Structures are given as structure tokens and as C-alpha cells.
Length: 448
Image (cartoon, rainbow, N blue to C red; front, side, top):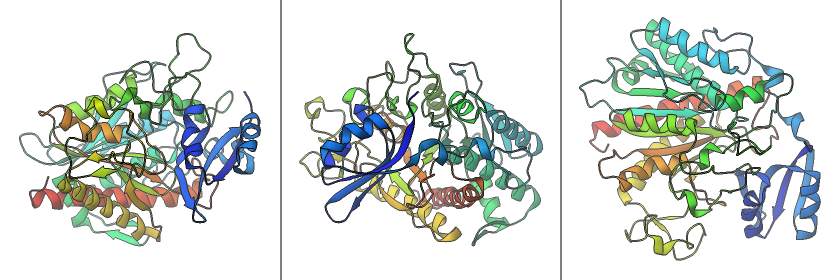
């Protein structure tokens, strides 16, 4: 396997940067920024051959060192899952599953473990945790879904959901406040969230991938995809967040090549890990909001991810095949329809998430539509929101992605040292609590 290097690419040619993922370059879309007026930059892990191929293309390449020196998960592994507050390192697959079981056992009044119906390609079972008083049966209690760990190398998000679940269970059980940095949630607020929201947490959607990332010998700390065997090819894996049935065959931000980091799979929703998420979307009663937690880039994003939004022309929408080929370009005539009311609710919930994060230690995440420098398709965010448009029987779900820390100046965003990850985990937990509080308020106002 060729060594990879962390690079920052800068150019005035935005189209060139947009083309890189489909050409097999492992660039991190959430790190894309406009810089120095008319230039754009993005980070990535590239081989020396890829770097050399870009040199003649009028692109500035800042090589910052070997990729593995920026990936700290295996060096900062947790010693136990039983911490009452924050663990002392990144959790293994087994520790995450044990933590879920432990919380369900010790907080039986409010927490219940649930099993997902599909085992992974390597035979692992998947579980999540449902937190809520009374379970929501027979009531119109709003439900919220938090998902993490679709991309294996992004190790902070699963630990964030485990920490959030542990904090809610502990504070509810003991009637205590929850202090997250500079932000305090009173015991009454914690009780309100647990009593008024049916919260479903799926901390680790891709356990096979995380197992490879955390493996001490013979592992791959940079692994992103699941572990599907692609017709006997040596190139394993599907990018789970390009496998959902939303403009899956459009080619926007995806690839049909096995070896590509954004390989979309052989068909929509082909992967058992994706089918597990679909199961939750299908079966959670009164689901109104879903948040998919990733890293990194300090972003809070909402639909659409394939094109810019507009609210005047309903005929301009993803179901109309006559517009195939026009989508995915900024500042052109085609823009995707979303009603003003839905845009407002996305902005309201997203704004609360952003404010909660900022309250902990002052980090200012950017709230934006998913379509920034890159267009994407096949993502959970867009699929979750689009379901009610495709099927009138489906409940409308307001959907988000959080690209969790660290700040732009850091080069170890996927796997920072755990002392730094703890600060990110804490602030994002506050953002997710604010999401729940926003849902409570919007439901009380009959807007959800």
C-alpha cells in the first residue's frame, strides 16, 4: 500500500477541486474553504504519485507530513468502557457495544438497547440505545435519531454519542445538572429532554471499518468505507454515505470504481449497514429529526447537498429526469426546491445546534446548506429528508450533518489526541442537546 501524505491544495480552479474525489483523490470535502478572495482550498490524504500528477495543473500543494502521524486513535485507546463520565481514550467496537449494554442494564427506566436486523459483512451485530421516559407508545412524542460512525476513520462521533447517552442517563437517574464546559444544563432541563423526546442513538453504524482502524497490528487507521468484498477485487468497501437511494446514479460526489474512497456500491441501499439505518427511519414512530455526525470541519449542514435551494419553483426538483445533468453546479439556473417553511425549520434547529456548540468553549461552527464547494448524492441527510417527497405516507424528517471539530489550523481532525477529542465531544454533546430542545419547542408550537 502506497504511503499517503496530508496535503492542502489551493487553486483558483474550483472545477478542478470538485473533480478530484471522483478521480480517486482522497480529499476531505468538509474542509473546503474559499481563501484569498478568488481561491479555494481543501485538505486530503494523497500518495506521492497523486501529488506529482497535480503539480503541472496550476495548483498549490502544501505537503504537511505522513498521514499516519495525524491519526492517533490506536495510540489513545480507552482502557475501559465503564467510566461514569468521560472515558480515557477512544472506544473499541467491543467497548462501544458493552457501553450500550451497560447503560441499558443500569438505567432500565429510561434506556433500552435495540438490535438492528442486519449483520455486517464480517458478521458483526449492531446495536443502539433508545432513551426516553415511557417509550412514546400511544403518544405523539417527537422522536429524534442520532447516527455516527458511518465513516470508519472518523472516530470522534461514535464516542460523542456514547458520552451523550451516558450523561443523560446519569443526570436523569441522580437528578443532577450536566455541566459541559461553560454550558450548564439544569436537572429540570435534562428531565424535560428525557420525558418529552423519544431519542434513538446509533453510535456505530460501521463496526467492521472501526475494527480495522483500531486494530493494533495489520490495521488501517485511514480506512473510511465498510468491508464489502467487491466481486473478488482487492479493493474492498463501499462508502456508506454514498449508498442511500437519493440521486444514487447521478454521479454527483460519488464513484463507480471499487478502489475509490467514495465508491457508491453496486446498487442503492445495497449495504447491510445502510439497511440498518433504513430500518430505523422506517420503524421509529413520530420521527421528526435525524442528525448524522461526522468529522471534521466545524460545520452544521442541512439539505440539500446536491444543489442550491430555492422556494419559488416546485417543478425544479430531484424527481424530474429532464433536469438530470443540470444538478450539482453552483450559481447556475437549476436550484432544488424546498418550501420556505422547511428552510426556516432547518435554520432554526441548525442554529440551536450551532449555538449549543459555541456555548461550551466558544467554537463557532458554520451553519450552511450541504451544497458548498462539492455536490454530493446518496447521503443519509438528503435521503432522510427526501423520503416524504417520494412517498406521501412517509413522515417528514428534518435532517442534518455535523462535521465535528477540530479547528481549521489542526491537521489531525479525524483522530486528534484524546485530550483534544474530549473538548470536541463535550461541545458536540451540547449541540445535540440543543437539537432536542429545539424539537420540543417546535412541537409545542405545532411546527413539527
